[in-house]
Image (tube, rainbow, N blue to C red):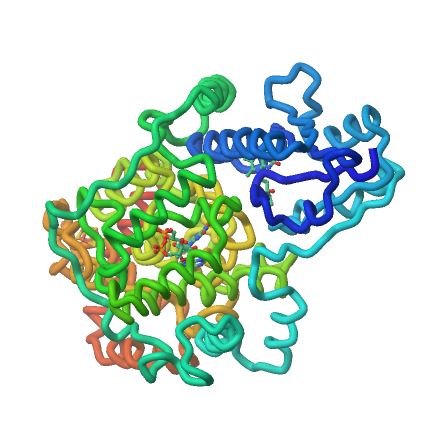
Length: 512
Ligand code: FAD
Ligand code: DLZ
Ligand code: SF4
């Protein structure tokens, strides 16, 4: 065997760089399901099943293209349980001249790959991951010398570079960003098309049984598992989004609605992140909807910005700032996660809804992650590293490169402002404005303090008060701090004691 090509679980793309120049006659492909990857955090059952099933289907596609694939299932009695152990076994069996791999998405795995040459005694060639549009060196060059890494400026560079929604050097429509038109609440809409559901085939059924047996204690349920696990089905899901939801994508992007966990979101992050959909192809499809007059500019621009802007930008920040980044704790937050993050058993209707949907679907949309669970964790002073592990565990699209900057940076402000210029902290009023959750809540969103008041209200002011030393200098918080100072001593004390009583009760493990 000439090259042993090691394909990782989130590298399921036919155009993958490690497959460039691959020769079915002389090369061999290795793919393996290993316990170490499935348990370094206790991933949601649906996430593991999705990855394993998509891996098995991808292996079949490669075989159909004539490749020889060594595929090790989790229940193979000889399974060595880690990438290193499986690589060694494959090298012993096949005696390749060289190992070829596309760079991984996580720092942890990169460190592992660096040890492979010594582990096996043969050379390792690691190739860049061209599925991302911005190479590491390009991001570093962009970031160098900038005082602030503002996403919006990075995004404009990416627009120029890809030519998406551009007329020569100028943005189509005369503006780069149409978010001002994108922040509307949503009304229940019985006409919203139902989401596509992909019934498990035999391969997926086998995986579901395996995951239930081996990971029964992990969060979530496999009931009604309906993810696409092949490129063809993921493309069908994309088509349905583009046709049925993209035109309204902008308008309802920040809205939250009980009983409608998906609204007009794309539900494609898991497919893109694992390699079943190509991000640039997805953006070109969306752009065509605008040029052909089927979707408005605010929707298409907003959608493309999430992918060539945010998605590429957070990856850039991850690789620029790791390995220390994941341990950042600018606000010195230390509180343990309350149990309701795993059970959804809380009287706070917003959190109960979002966590329940997360447990069911291994999905929540952006504003739910940012302004409900994330906002609560921030206000309550939960330990950002524990919060990071929770997000990595529960979402089917979570890999460190994308999850860490979103959680540690954007949502918990634990990086002190590398990624965002102020913490996304908000009182109950924001949730009440953007959702219908408060209508069915034991707490009263209008009540500021005391028994029955919405906990987000007192926690919000307590958060600002508690972190005054670190946040007072932040220009974007000048207004709330001015409001805080204008309050009477008694009112400030009221906020503090309401927040303290709530947090003490939560820490005692009582239902809140
Ligand atoms: P849509 O809302 O329809 O957006 C379209 C696409 O844009 C997404 O599929 C995704 O590829 C991209 N995108 C949008 N926002 C972001 C963003 N902030 N960062 C990167 N890509 C983005 N996304 C992940 O893929 N994995 C994560 O682990 C993850 N963790 C998050 C944690 C927190 C606290 C927050 C606030 C956001 C997180 N996100 C994460 C970003 C975002 O919430 C998800 O990408 C999105 O909800 C996925 O659903 P969708 O496909 O329906 O997205
Ligand atoms: C997330 C994950 C899981 C749960 N299982 C596997 C696996 O068994 N085999 C594999 O190759 N990859 C898996 N992955 C994805 C890897 O952890 C992924 O390559 C890294 O998270 C890097 O992004
Ligand atoms: Fe959430 Fe407060 Fe509204 Fe209840 S009242 S749903 S706790 S924001």
